[in-house]
Image 1 (tube, rainbow, N blue to C red):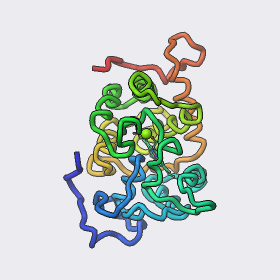
Image 2: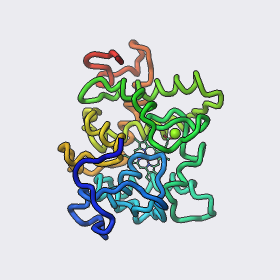
Image 3: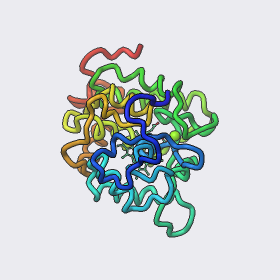
Image 4: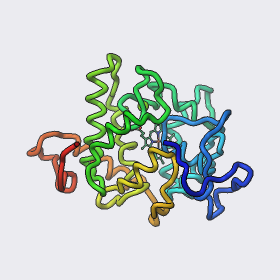
Length: 261
Ligand code: HEM
Ligand code: MG
């Protein structure tokens, strides 16, 4: 589903700087020669021109500024993420990466993604509606809880392990994956309650467009490493399927209907 609603700008009118307060209203999907990858947010920020629209030469400065301007990420948080991303560039001591370099399987890209197919089955980086519909089934409330996010993650892992003979999901992958699964909370939700807005999140995944026209705005509080660490711990606890486990905590339980249909 390509986004065909408001605010589709022509490349000629693209802002030269993401400082432009109206940068959210510029949007154009990647065209021929533009790089996109497996990260729905990096693609989205390139579509909105917060990142270079061609998805190339993403340096620390460029990424830090984009995540701060668009999502209010504290620079120190983005710098850590950027360091973790650099190995995606095979050139020794490279100081940048391109979005398509994120596609290489088993470097950063991993199995059981919420919205992409496993590399074993073909394309590991383009949005896949069938896969995403499976993940989405588990987001049963308007305010999606940490448990519901984890349910979708675990469901994808089960689906993958049951069907992909090369299924690989190490503990390192698991920590990256938890970071990805909590990302919609810090971008579109409430990091204290550990919930996120289903409408915003679904629109974002399906269109690689920020849900401004649906009422979303840039988070008013900076997103910090501490926020991400806390949410990651909440998600780790929600991965147990036992209801009497000491780690099964209040706030990570399903509050209402838990059906997946
Ligand atoms: C997934 C890289 C920032 C949200 C991914 C993946 C990569 C990646 C390689 C694919 C993993 C996989 O599913 O196989 C990066 C880099 C970033 C960045 C290098 C910046 C330095 C962000 C931000 C957000 C975000 C700021 C949102 C706040 C997501 C989500 C997924 C993801 C939700 C999971 C997609 C899925 O499971 O289908 N990212 N990312 N990312 N990223 Fe990012
Ligand atoms: Mg993947």
